Image 1 (cartoon, helix red, strand yellow):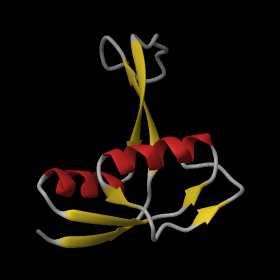
Image 2 (cartoon, rainbow, N blue to C red):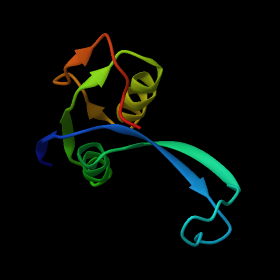
Image 3 (cartoon, rainbow, N blue to C red):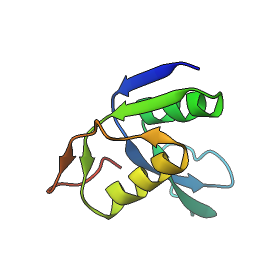
Length: 94
């Protein structure tokens, strides 16, 4: 088992499902929408965690509702966030 520190970004992704890929400038209604944690560093660590590796993330987290959703999901995936700087103001990237 490897111990891995990833630096990068953690985001909140909003995924809309549509019936088909829209043509340019078309407006389509979403069939459904879901919210998921994203960002290259956090996604990579989650895959590595599923393979049995221990992951640490170093990405800025904001102390607000979206930041709490992201951090809770990282902890569910057994990703350690102790090295993440936390800001009291701002908004997580979406």
